[in-house]
Amino acid sequence: METKKEYILLDFPKIKNKYRASSPGKVAEKIFNKLIKHLNFSHNMNGELYLVFHIKDLQTKKILPFIGTVIYLKNHINFKKQKKNIEIDHRIIVSKFDSNMKKVFHKIES
Image (tube, rainbow, N blue to C red; front, top):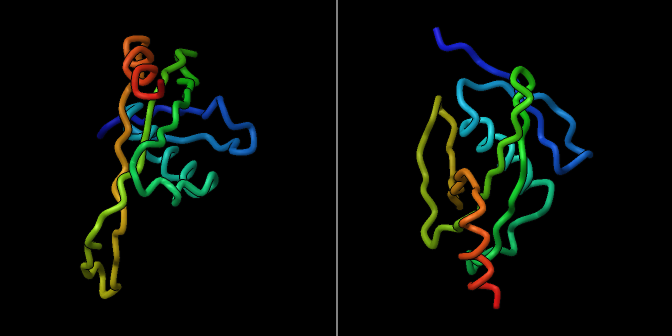
């Protein structure tokens, strides 16, 4: 059985939950999904907006930066899951963020 670690989100004090998962990437995806709802990322239709956030491993105290964006689908995906109709209108992309990325995004912004 996978051991799950606990993490917290550092950048948004209004979202004070602890998150548990087997990897920091999975926690970052959970947190990013919560952030896009909280921040109303629905105006990101052109895909140019992104969000940098930091999570902290409560066991090791290590702080991990992540970057995420939302891509809205032109054609929604519909399927049934446990007799319930599900519609997906977006996909998220979350990745570790490092200092080299700052140079890339700075070029895009200028």
